[in-house]
Structure formats: structure tokens, C-alpha cells
Image 1: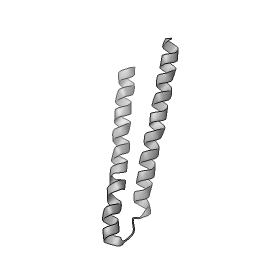
Image 2: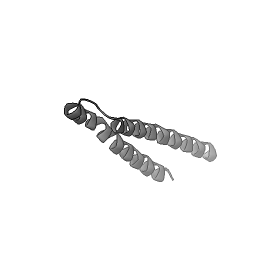
Image 3: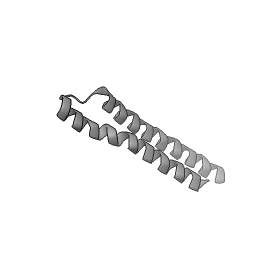
Length: 71
């Protein structure tokens, strides 16, 4: 069970990072090209970061439940 949670956490970190990375790099390009960053890049950053923290909270909650169940 713990290895499954570790795999899930690793997978979710990777996906949220893949959302944050283009959201973080595209404002640099868009500011150079259009002099404004745009809403899509901000949306990618906010959604990726929010997803990361929500998943971390859920994983910690599940680990606490498992520890309480074992003892």
C-alpha cells in the first residue's frame, strides 16, 4: 500500500510540474513577443500549483489514516 501511495505521489508531482513548467516559461517568451504575459500562462501556474498542494494534502491525510489504523 505504501509503495502505491509513493508511486501516486511521484506521478502527481510530475504532472503538476509539467503544468507549472510551461506556465512559468511561456510568460518570458510572451512578454518578449507581445509585451504581456496572458491569462493562459497564469492559469497553468495557478492550476498546477493548486493541484500539487491538494494532492500533497490528500496523501498526508491517507498516510495518517493508515498509521492510525495500524496502531
